[in-house]
Length: 234
Image (cartoon, rainbow, N blue to C red; front, top):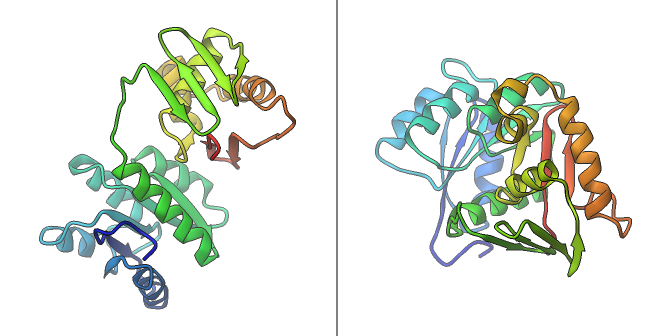
């Protein structure tokens, strides 16, 4: 079984019966407990008696769509949510992430990609949360927050105050897609959410400093039109 010894439950929400059948089969073979719903209303009714560990939902559905479902779930729970969207839905994709979704996958997608995203989302949820930890040690990184020092593969990296704040915020959410709006609001304040040029400049600076060995795009991955994903390495 690909996941932990305790069976984890996944709710698949999509109005296309063929997609729900395929996802149910693929996820069940990995040892997950699966239930399906045809739209957000059905999903909410189901969750009154059965609580999943993860939700995989389409965005375009009748009645209550995936965006509304994200908003509803986030009012009640921190269950991770992965949204499925078709290519070209960047605007609603960003809305879903800002509404509380944790990740997105663009259709058509490979089953291996979906399974990897599912494992990552469940891993983040099961890991103990330490929002105020003074030191972040993950992958190639050691970030001493009180000391304001950063090491990448034991190499010290000197950052400006804003570069440091941006890195710390991203490092606290490894593997999660963070929208431009989310990052700007967290680091520069809500008054800067409409100025993405700040982010492009600082992400560019961070990449040069963190990836001095030439592994461009290795730690900070661009999610086109949406935002960035931080991967700290193995």
